[in-house]
Image 1: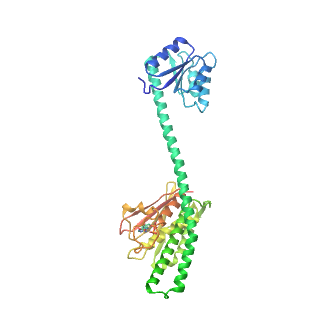
Image 2 (image 1 turned 45 degrees about the vertical axis):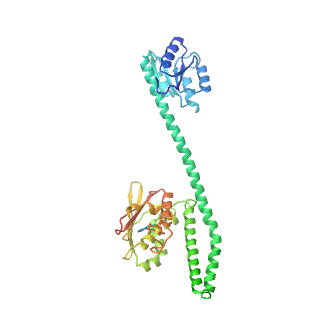
Image 3 (image 1 turned 30 degrees about the vertical axis):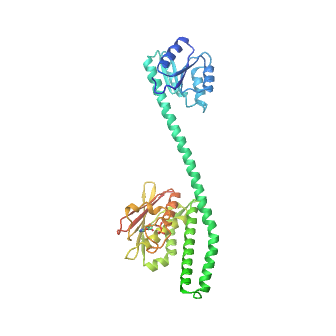
Length: 373
Ligand code: ADP
């Protein structure tokens, strides 16, 4: 029996005896065999119901086998059908070449042992089945990719609209709570003052969260084209923004020479800013010490931001890049849990990767890559 008894073979041959002999061998092996005596009849039959394989004699009374093969292979609806051409042994070698170059998948010469015919057909049918399985799997993957892209875009849109629209009512609540605190503090009892304090704290935090979420959702939406930017300039600008924090914490920031890269300068600045802010925040007993470097590895720059702070348990190395994931309470260290998720999104938008290597108490090194322009 064949691998797949349902496989349909079209046997195209004008010589009755030869056609009959081949059909008989194939039917005995379990294939469904259809027949055609001319090229035109074969093409008509293929258009009606495409077979899995066409066994095609080169010499036909109307169109020759090369032409039939060419038509099968140039029509996208039939191109995947396997065509095995057959001719008598005395045929010119150039005909074999012509047949294969014209798109035939195989070429057999007669007389042929039935075992050889069957083994060849079986091998081709197997090939076609594998190809079909691959194509099917590919189609499923493509569909899933489209679906994933769509739901990703929807989610992004949702996060953007939600955080954007929440800003307005929140602004109103913030303003009035702050007004209440300013104008009426001390006019109620101590408990009321305490409650107002909590409310101010809550809305301020919510504003921070929403602003961060909005920034996160905007990473992909930015249309600013990438430009060649000097990372040392970006760093200098960020250090200026962070100067109060640097003074407060007595942080020491050093760096090797940094390259120019093709990037969105604002976004890359946010990556430096977030990584440095974290290094300043999670510094342990000593004042923060941070060192930035970059080295060329293959086709990418690998940046490193190394601190001497409290470190991270390796098992949390992935989790900290997920939005809102933090390893500490807000009373231990303030923060929104968005910084590293934002860094990852920005770096991935630039075609790079970001990760951390760290041990508790041993400091942390955050690495990220950017393609060489
Ligand atoms: P946030 O700083 O607002 O908490 P991030 O997304 O920037 O949010 O960081 C997530 C968590 O990763 C932090 O809460 C902290 O536990 C850990 N983390 C980040 N940077 C460092 C660092 N340099 N050293 C130690 N822990 C860090």
